[in-house]
Length: 180
Image (tube, rainbow, N blue to C red; front, side, top):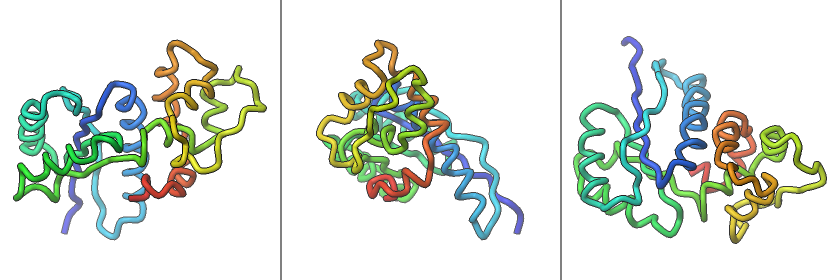
C-alpha cells in the first residue's frame, strides 16, 4: 500500500487564533507523521474563508465546501462556544468523524503561555523576571495574562504566529485540553 496524502482545513474564531494555530497544527501533524505506522504526505493546513463566530448557516456552508476537498476539517472555538462544534457535527452525520473540534478549557491564548522559553523568545525585550503561571488551564483570563506577558503591546497578535512556530510541543502535551 502506498503513501496517503492527508489534507486539513481549519476554521477558527478569529485571525489571532488562526495565526497561532496554523503553524502549530502543521508542526504537530509533522510530529505525528514521524510516529505513524503508515506513511502519509502532508502539505499543511489550509485556513477556511470564514470564522466560526459567523452565522451558523455560513459556517455550515463553509464546512460543506471544505469536506469536498479536505480529509479533515478542524473547527476551533473557545470553551464557551463548545456546543457550536457539536451542532455543526450533527449537521453532517456521515462525515462527523472528519470534523475535529479544537477547544481549549478557556481560550487558545492559554496554550500560548504553555512554554515560557518560547514566550520569552517572541518578546526578547520583555522583563526576564516575569513568570508564566504553572497550570495555564486554570488562568481565569488567559488573554489578559498573555497581553501582560507580551508587555502590553498593541500589536501583540503578531507574536502569535511566532509562538505557533516555537512553542514546545512537549510543553503543550502537558496541557490536558491540548492533548485531547
